[in-house]
Amino acid sequence: MKRIKLLHGIIITLVILLIARSFFLIFSIPLGLMKNIIINIPVLLLLGLIYIERGLSYCIKNGYFNSKSILKFKRGGLFFIFSGLISLIMGAIMLFFQTNTILVQNLMYQNISKSFLILVIGLGLVIISDFIKKGNIIQSENDLTI
Image (tube, rainbow, N blue to C red):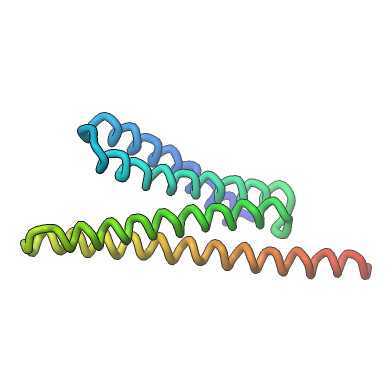
């Protein structure tokens, strides 16, 4: 349980940092379509982190296997998947239309790899929610036999 509480604290810190970064982006990027897209990606990550934080708090309060944490982890994972897909598509489009300088290409490849990592983390969260769901079923069957 100590590790879950530590992870819960780290997630809360990440939420605060992401909110601060979003406010910085709102006031530093000029108006336009790119501003809306660039700001919406961290918002999706923020929503995903908030759902993960809620799932962890339900695990701390109600134990590992409960239906509320299953739902929160799954929704958080779906937000991560959606954010990763949007970032991946945007990175591929920007890589296609950018100049051929090595620095720009390296930055775009790093952005694409980060987007892919976010996508994989989202898939992992959805899989973890399935494990918790199976554990919840097994625990409820075990409670009935005792």
